[in-house]
Image 1 (cartoon, rainbow, N blue to C red):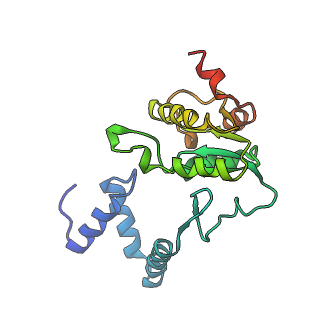
Image 2: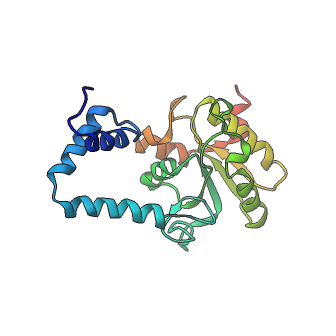
Image 3: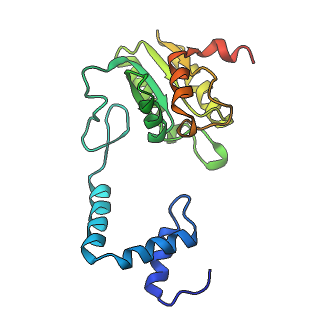
Amino acid sequence: MEALPSKLLERTVEEFSKLPGVGKQTALRFALHLLRQNKNDAATLSAAIDQMLEGIKFCKHCHCISDSDVCEICSNPKRQKDVVCVVENIQGLMAIEHTAQFTGVYHVLGGVISPIDGIGINDLTIAQLLERVEKEGIKEVILALPTTMEGDTTNFYINKQLQRFPVSVSTLARGVAIGDNLEYADEITLGRSIVNRVPFDSIFNKQ
């Protein structure tokens, strides 16, 4: 992209372009859009970002993003507290919630095991998951991680760690294509995959 007529504009474009999926041209459109708005609108956006960064918490049970110490899902008395669906991130949680087929609670790992990206076991909330299973009377753990090599590696590790507990371990039926992240799966396929979930060992022992 050619040099911009303002260093201030250039700096704003540079910051916008750090967002996922935002290139320089899109970042420039964002910046120019803000310039066309009145200062109150821009100030409102800035205040919302500041409040989000200062006020966002992580649920002490599931580790999902929340406005309070316990998120709305974990505090909902209608949810099945003894069925926990393990997801990579908030996008995976939201994808499953949108299907309206799951009535249990979640556990957000914060990623998957990926040595090439420097993400190890201790970088995830696996220890907290095991603690929940041990102390909260969990009856079933559903492994709903991406169907990628990293996701499957994480699945295998968690399943192995759960063997010492009297808990059922299941995984999504493979209606979700190999290599897919849950956030990109359509709601019908994903909904069927969680409703028709299968024992973890049964599906992987076939491979």
